[in-house]
Image (cartoon, rainbow, N blue to C red; front, side, top):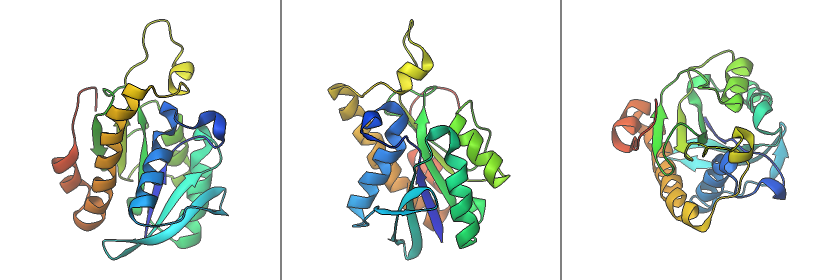
Length: 191
């Protein structure tokens, strides 16, 4: 079984914000695979289905970004899913808007949601799909930048990276993170 997590904040106030690109990617995949992500369980909205013949769970933690790991740990423990089978999709301000960076494992890179997941799973060995949302412009507070709504232009750019993330997930499931990295990594910014 695989747990596919999109990081974001619950509530209308946070819809269409940079920090919620993980939720947006989960919603896109839910539509693509006809999976309803509407059950509340383990502090998350979840939906179950299959991708590449594997049982999967699409997850939108409802704990807010900084505590994402609490929900994910509960799910991983309950279903006995190893960290290697938890795929996390989230925003990255160190990457150009629209770029995609897949990693097999690694540090939190300053992202509090990832920091929480690493702490709760006691492992950094989970694949992640980072979706670039661009670096904050001068004069912006980082919090204000990631909680700002996408512009119409941003949405055009980001929709392509969300589609790429939706292609990368089955590739990770079928052939591993390395294969997905070779096929789908794009854009600038730091690793």
